[in-house]
Length: 160
Length: 72
Image 1 (tube, rainbow over the protein chains, first blue to last red):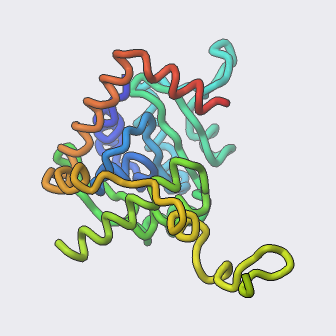
Image 2 (cartoon, each protein chain N blue to C red; image 1 turned 180 degrees about the vertical axis):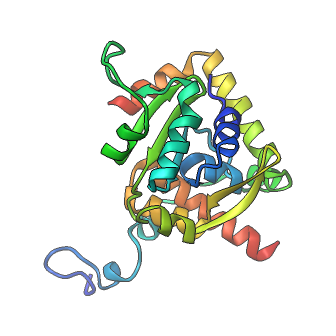
């Protein structure tokens, strides 16, 4: 079952530095499109990788779309060895991105982010401008729909 | 077609992002009424509402079709 609240709480409790991207960020801005995974850009310092592994470990992350018998150790070492991870865990699908097409790494994501309150916690999410850069770089059909939504949201904010 | 060169590119191609050019000729039609209703909610309420939709899709077996489509 997709439960972003568990992810947000786990990351918040462990004080992980991250920025929410993708469909969840679109939803928080007001989009009505359904999304089935939690995308985030994480900071790659040693301390943050340790916190991230500690936070998500209890949710039993494994590699998505890989045979379940393939062994996978989700720890600081694994996170340091890779960059982008598409995971399936007990709280649903979570994508950990060390680098985001159209944006860059965590410092650039942080620069293009804003704070919102989510489940009574401060969480950083990409701004509409940041999302626009990502969506434009990704260029899939759903990104085109999101780009149109972003443009409508901007208009609503300008008029509202 | 005087603005189109031999490669089929328009003079605007380098200044107008690809998505705006596509949407200019083929708007997808975002439901503005639904969007306005959603903007009255807090971010947490927006997410909870979207999760209700996801739960409905999962309950009706739609998620398998979504994942299968994504895998293609």
